[in-house]
Every structure is written in C-alpha cells, then in structure tokens.
Length: 180
Image (cartoon, one colour):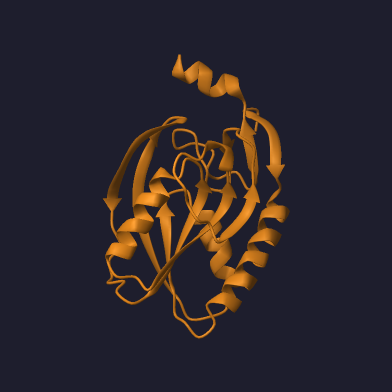
C-alpha cells in the first residue's frame, strides 16, 4: 500500500462496473455459447468477477501471452500457452485486464480470426487509449484511464501487486528505483 500513489477505482467500483459489462454481454451473446478467453495472468480477477455475472452457457479458455518487461512493451508478442480447443465457427470474447499499446490484442485477434472464429470481441477492465500504437476495437470497456502505470486487480509491476483489491497508480519512484 505504501507504493500506491493513488487509488483510481475502488473494489466496489470495479465490481459494479464489471456487473454492468456482464449484463451487456448477456444481452449481446443471448442464444450463443461463447468462449471467454482470458489472457493470463492479469485477466484472472477481472475474468472471475465477470464470470460471476455471466448468465449463460459459456466456455473458458486461457492463453499466456507476453509482450512486457517491467513497465515497457517489448513490441514482440510471445504465445507462451495457447488455448486447448478448436474455435472454428465459435464466438470468442477475449478478456483482458488492460488495453495499452494494442500490440498484443491486435496480434491475438488476427490469430483467432485466422483460426476460423465466427466473431472475436474484446472485454477489458481498463482502456488506456493514449498509449495506443495499433488500432484495436474494444467492445466492452470497464474504465478509460490516463497514461499512468496502474497496478492491482490483476495488474502488476514485475509480478507484484496483482492481489490488490482495487486499481491504483504505482508511485514512480518504485519502478524508477528498480529500473536504475
């Protein structure tokens, strides 16, 4: 907690907004059995909260995709763990903690479409449009945020802080000290 500059969204705000997103997803996917693909590790708390409120049959899958080291994107998307099922002619909803540069999601959306998915949409907890490098169409956004380094509710800095029950801004001196 001493490393948090400020809280952007409380646990209650995140939970309430996630329920609103789930309500819209329930309407949009009525009559379908979508596959929700969580991008590990950051999506876990958001996906768990979303699944509590998704009121339909759905499947869950997970991918481990990496493009960050510390606070910076490497620009190279690595698929460390792929999904385990065929997605041909299926509706896919990618669940992500944050959309930042768009590089990772742009790559994953293209890959899933190439594999024959009927539709591929994105649900994210946080959308940081100011850092976008490539275009990404995000259908479900929890919150739009400024260009600050955020942690908590799944978001990390070098694998730390994911367990914070809220979304906060990391103090600059924390990562400047560790990057020095």
